[in-house]
Each structure stands twice: as C-alpha cells, then as structure tokens.
Image (cartoon, rainbow, N blue to C red):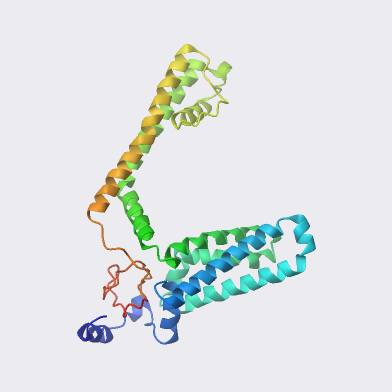
Length: 298
C-alpha cells in the first residue's frame, strides 16, 4: 500500500498528455489491469483463457492441413476459424483501446505478434495460400511467463538478456576473428587441395572451413592430401575453442549480473511507456518517470 502523501502526489501529478496520451481511468484502467498484468486473479484467468484459445487454433490449423480430415469436417473447421479470428481481433482492439499510446503498443514486439495472429486470415480472402501463416500464433505462447507468474524464470530471462547485451561487443569481435580465420583457411585449402579434390572455388572452400570449425562436418567435401588433412585436423581442434570462448564470455557476464541482482520482477506495467517488470513498491516508472497507480495483486 502507498502512503496518503504519495497517493496525493500521484493524484496531483501533471498528466503527460502530450508524450503519453490521455491518462487511463474507469473501464480502460480495469481492462488494462486484466489484459496486460497477470498478478490478479482476473488477469491470470484472461491470459490462461487466451493461451487455451491459441493452442486450440493451432490444433485447428494442423488438422485442416490433413486432406482427409479437411474434406470430412470442412464446414465446422471454417466456422471455428472464423470464431477464433473474431476473438483474437476483439482482443487486439481491446489492447489498443485501453493503452495510452496505441501506436507504441502496435509497434512493439507483442503488438506485432498480436496483429500477425489475425492478419493472415483477412489476407487469406485475397491470397488463400497465406492461410498457413496463422501458425505465427504460437509466438503468443511466450506470454506463459506472465500467466504462470514464474518470476524466477522471468528474472532469469531478463538476466540472460542483460548478459547478452553486455557481452555483445566481445562476441562480435570474436566472431569477426573467426570469420577472418575461415576466410584465410578456406583460401589455403583451395590452394592446397584444388578443384580436383572438391574445393572448386574459394567460396566452396570457405563453406567447408565453416562446417569444419563449427564441428558440423557434413562430409560432402573432404581433403585428400596429407597437408590438407593436417590443416583440417587443426581446424577441428580450433572448433572446440570456438564453442568455448563465447560460453566463457556469457558466463562471466551472467556472474557479474548475479552480483548486482535486483529483486524478482512482477508483471506490473507502466501505463505510459508499456514497459513491464516494475517492482511492486515503485511509485514511478524507472524507464520514463511517469507516476504509477497503486499496484493491484492477489
């Protein structure tokens, strides 16, 4: 619970009308809490129902791809798909209506996924071959982290994301070095083996070098000379190092993240910038500074 002083400050805070749009209130605020947050009973029921609908619609698409089943049940399959499309369309419209900045949500990752969940059906009226794209709805199952309140997994996911961002430059430098190595070794193998042994060009030789260093080794191209086999052996041993170095970089960054680990996040979202994972005792968004309403949870 927030103190009366803090509540009064929140009530008297100027509404960020220009930057964030109209303040949420009334039914829009209630709808926002149910649709976007999963820390209340209504929010969990909504998200669980949505996940069931997504799974059923995916099963429907897979069954419809079976010719014998489609011919036997064409009528009810069509009506069921129309019903799911209407449901997801209504849900998408509600998400746009109850946020302050609908364009901000529409251009976000989940906003685009929600749009793609219904768009193929409407496009299928003009381009029937696009109907199979409704399988993109499976991406909506990513919300399972919010639905089941797996805060430990959400925290681990966020920690992994921070570690990836922190180590991205180091990994990029390492991958650049690996790229230079495979270019050089591919050129060397083209000179050593030559077209008569399958290394018909430098691009083909570079392809062989990449498959060897990554320890994939399809075997479609193999060295025949002793020198070529020696070089291939060195590259295979190098492949173990290629796998180990990024792992070490990520491990170091994740250890550093764990040292300064923050409290487990919630599904609380900012009504202004739509960022998720705000702490339960926060009064202002740490991303945009907008005041937050009282946190609702069970």
